[in-house]
Image (tube, rainbow, N blue to C red; front, side, top):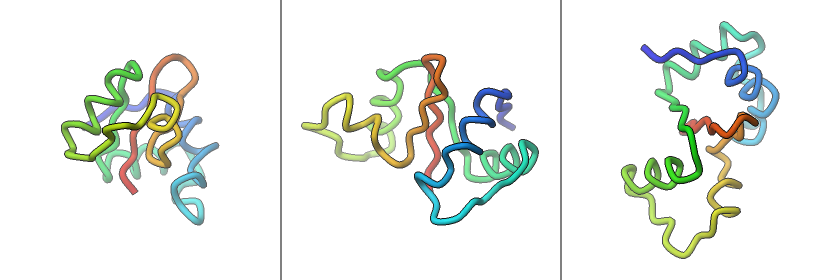
Length: 87
């Protein structure tokens, strides 16, 4: 089971519309349950975002750092970490 801290949950609740057409959660508890269900991950750097996409088999060759961080699935937590949610 994943544990998502308050910063991650707040980030997801505030920005979930970048990935989904309508809100999928309206409380921190609902957000945590949703993120656990879809096996979201929190990584600690841009490099780890790259590694995640590489391991997932997504072809990001030629994409720059800005492009990968603008992917709908990537949420900037604001403290150097990134939440990755597959929609």
